[in-house]
Length: 364
Image (cartoon, rainbow, N blue to C red; front, side, top):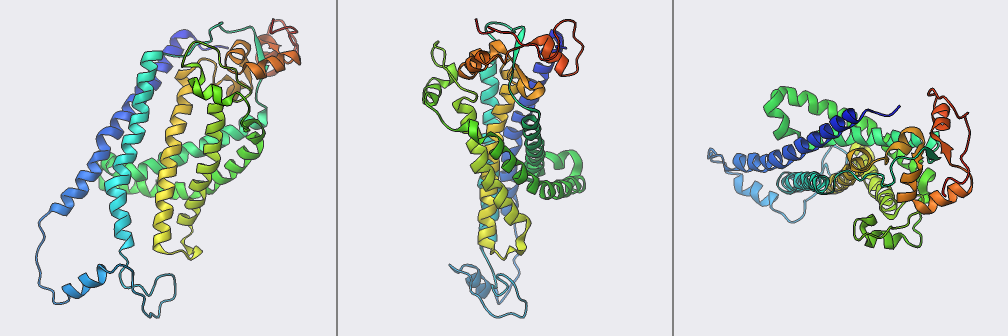
């Protein structure tokens, strides 16, 4: 059953409103972290005479930490004062959080502008009465598995990164501490599942994401946005293939650096841990920005884009417009099916065609 037009319009407006709200929140509240940190540093201090102040100042300002002997065994336990942690904190508060907020907010704003200018990309030939099988049940399961894990990690990670200036005014410091603690524990528990899902995605989809002849043409024409000529594409276009390889490499960086942070017993020093945190945060922000675009296309950006992952089948006209090389091959192999046959296979009530009925010559 198709969703009524009014429901679709309301859903699209709600999605656009949600994106607007998220963009505004990120753009408005991210600078507050920088302001809060600066104001804390500018507070007048109480001067107390300390005869050892000059000694500790000299120790703190050393180029490299000085190791000594201690009865406590462990990594860097012989280091009296390690300034790496303070440099990492300053980078996180003064650069990572404000710039990261601007990047995510800018991506959302650009997508909203693009939506207002271009609107939803329709199926030019209109919805067909035929469909093509696009994804198997296992492929869809793998996709939604990594999608759900990634969304959970993204939301909890963003709360840990940006939540202080955004949530403390709403819930207070005690309420935010509970939320942040729950996000931290959930983030740490779900993190290893992301690596498992990433391995499953790689082995299931890598064969279809090898770059082919013609992919560069798709990129140069912006997937058909630049110019009026049709851009041929196979099962995945170059944009989807590039997102796949970003997910593989950047996702691996996120997952491995996350394991380093979750398991400090690996015997790594503070500098390596700080570097892992920086790589983890930057990689995660990059992937979140890419996935926001991916979600936009699958929801309000393009008609028919998400049907393959919802039902396993895609509209025939949509396939010919966006993946014509694959669609032509599938049609020649007799894979096109009537809407009634697809509905029957998905357990929906039908009135005519039996399950498995195919439409020969669907590409004519």
